[in-house]
Length: 459
Image (cartoon, rainbow, N blue to C red; front, side, top):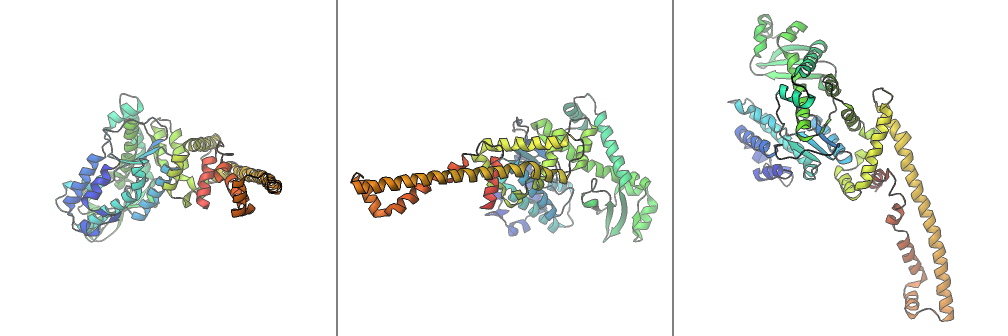
């Protein structure tokens, strides 16, 4: 599967030599883009994928995986994707993400699109994000998949080990109530479009706000004729809790979150993955349905606080880290175990893990161990230098004595004459002081892999 998606992209000529082919995209009709997206969903089906055996295989939230929900802004999407690439390279064995080209397929039932240019622009942005992830996808560290579908009842039965979906429905009802009680929304008309603005806590809404636009009057609004009359006069109407509940807007927002959770639950069921989410709301939902969220919480901590746990990680290309992992697999596993152990120890206090905790892990645990490795390298270097000095003195004495006594072999006399004693000593020093020899003194240490990463960052 790893190359099929990019074979399709390259064959379509929507991209050339790793760059967007804007001419091809601008001349593609919505039907062309929808058909392309449908084909991509077939190529990324989970049906042929084996179940994972590693506990470090993850299914990412929509936002971490580059989807346009909960934020459609390209820069925001890319920021999340870069975090995911960092996590995949530095911690995970494999991360499954939703194939967000599915968003274009949702338009297949529409006879006409009012803004074809925007449709093409959205498609181009999706291709740019996939292209950024291309090296990690080809390395099978990130795998786009078509979201597996389970009805609520089946998902509850398979994931929660129960015969009905009461627990899942109860959690969803509670989530809807949370949106209904904590967000504020208004509705207005702008350029013939119906616009709903919502504001609320960031735990519920990305950036604390969201906007939904509809070309036609949302059906639920027809239930509130006095509001319709006011918006048609150009007024912005702030919706009461009752009106908010009546038009089903809180339910709509809650179910958008549930779609994401459903993807993670279904992927976990199909492929035996653990959750990777940056959203506390998802962890709270897991608690409500009585799953053990410990692994998911640790994943969230590492993803969220990666640059606090390892401050220099931002300066290193994820592909460089993958190369190091390939050459230092055992050292990488040791490092990951140490990181998990440190986080688990901090979580025993029962408090919510914070940025300060992540910084403390680096300062109290990671940094001192890295400094110790530096010290050991320097100590080994000094020992080698002393040894080389002794060997140089011995060689100098042997060569001098041999030349004086006539006992030095002809070949070595010729070398000494041609290169000079200094050259011989330099070659000896270079051979003895090989960097790889020095690193052998710390290779078995549990943070050797991280030390190598830092050395790469310094070079």
